[in-house]
Picture 1: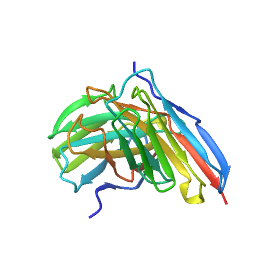
Picture 2: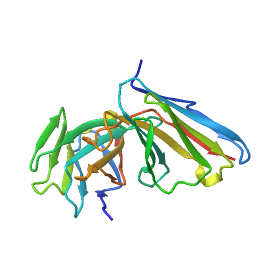
Picture 3: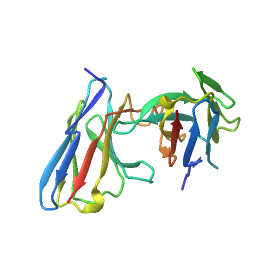
Length: 114
Length: 110
C-alpha cells in the first residue's frame, strides 16, 4: 500500500451536485490535512485533524465540509460549489500535529466545477 | 503575518546548467522542508533542515539553512530534465504552524 491515497483522482461536478473526496493514509500518522492548490497561488491549508478532532479550520466556506471518522481516513464533502473552487485538492498526513513539519502528501484530486 | 518569500517563481534552463532557489523570511523557523511536486502528483518531501547553517546534500541537490534559521536555499548542479517540477519550501514556526512559500516552477530543457 502506498503511503497516502486519494480518490477520485479527477472529478467534474456541476454547481448543484454533492460529491465527496476521500483520503486514506497507511502510515500510522495521527494528523491529517486538506489543502487547496490553485494555479499561481501558494498551497492553502483548509483543515487539520489531530486524532480525529478538527484542530484548524482556516476560514473555509461552509460548502466544504470535512469528516474524519478515524485516524486513517479523511473526507471532504462538497456541495453547491462555485467555478472558482476548481483546483487540485491535496490530502496530507504527519506523525503528529505541529511536530517536525514533515508531511506526506497524496496525489491529489483534480476538481473541475462547471 | 509570517511570510516565506520564494524566488524565482519561474525558471527555464538548459540541461547541464546550475540553479539556485531561495526562500527568505523575517521570521525564525524551527525547521524548514523542501518538497518537489511533479505535474499531476502531490508534493514529495526532499529534505528537512533544522540547525542554523546546516547543509544537506541529496545527489545533485544541495540544501542550506541560514545561520539565523530565517532563510534557506536549494542549489541544483548540472540540472537534468527529470528535475523539472514545482519546488516548495515550507517553514515550521516554533509553535508548529506551517508557512508556505509560493513555489518555484522549474523547467529543464534537454
